[in-house]
Image (cartoon, rainbow, N blue to C red; front, side):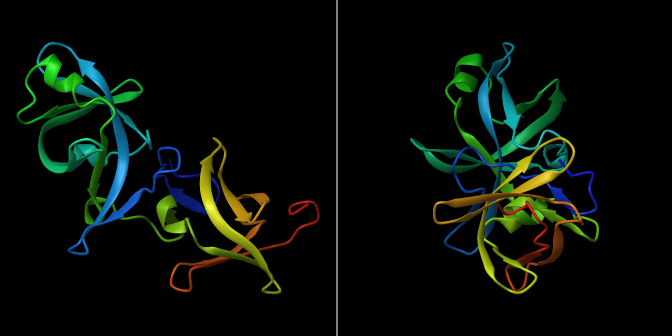
Amino acid sequence: MRSRSSRKTGRSPRPDSTTPLIVLDDGERLIVIGELVGAHGIQGEIRLRAFNPDSSVLAEVAQVFLLSPDAGRRLASLERARPHGAVWLLRICDVTTPEAARALTGTRVAVREGDLPPLEGGQFYCYRLIGLDVVDQAGEPLGAVADVLATGGNDVLVVRNGADEHMIPMVDRWIGEIDLQARRIVVHAIDGLLD
């Protein structure tokens, strides 16, 4: 979800500790967007729990990558994708029975990075923030972004430096600069924020 603060992120939440970004041998970049969680109905539709419930990328793509620990990675064509309550319902070509849909449960779904919708100025996809160095205004290192949490009001950076962990809200009061090229975030060290 895009945060409501002026520091907006296009959510691309991750499943547990699994990276949302996969770089293929040919350099193509895939973004994991959700996980298949079970069959729906009798015609082979399957439910997808999207890591970003607000994303509409599934309505805009014709193909997705299915990432399974057992079967590896395969490109799949979508016949249709539609939101359904808290999940998306997918109709994947060649998946025509509930049994075939159930067999895909637990499979992660990814899209090409180039298929993600463009963001407005000042917005960032969360996966692009993971791993960035975080420093205070004096340039003192505070750690690196380990995660980005959606809290409803605004996103929160989880910054780790060894055993130390800081939770930094993604709001202008605390975030000074995000420089993707330099792979650095500058934060305002307000009293109590980093204690």
